[in-house]
Image 1 (cartoon, one colour):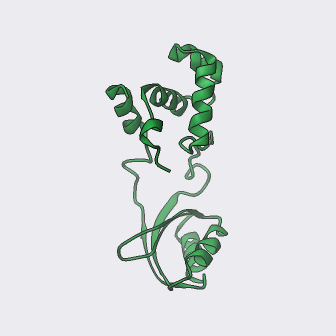
Image 2 (image 1 turned 90 degrees about the vertical axis):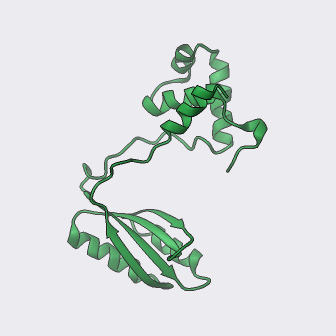
Amino acid sequence: MLPADDEALDALDARLLLLLTDEPRLGVLECSRRLGVARGTVQARLDRLVSRGVLGGFPPALDLAAMGYGLTAFAVLEIAQGHRGEVTAHLAAIDEVCEVHATTGQGDLLVRMVARDNDDLQRVIDEVVDVEGVRRTSTSIALSTPVRTRVRPLLERLVGDGH
């Protein structure tokens, strides 16, 4: 969801989000102390960011490799017309499927999945291919992740611009 112009993030929102990105266990009072604003201001900002969908929660950052899922792969799926909802519901039921994006281009869905090793990946791919409505897949194994998922540069730009 994109914010309307009057609801755009400002520098204080960005500073608050950066603070919580770095230290997600901070309480509202500590955030207000570090930002130099009233506790009520921080609480109101958090409430607004949550209600607008900008802030979806405070999940811990988990290292899937440390949890035993050291292999990440991406699959491009071509699906039969009219089966996207059914296919995505089945994909959501496969534990190793971490993300699914509807895309333009060669395929219809981009799937990020994890596995313990190559044999486990083959099992996961077999589960994906067995989903009714999946016509074709092309899978690539990630060798490394030189740039991890990030939002920090976008938040820092807001802080620097003073919005």
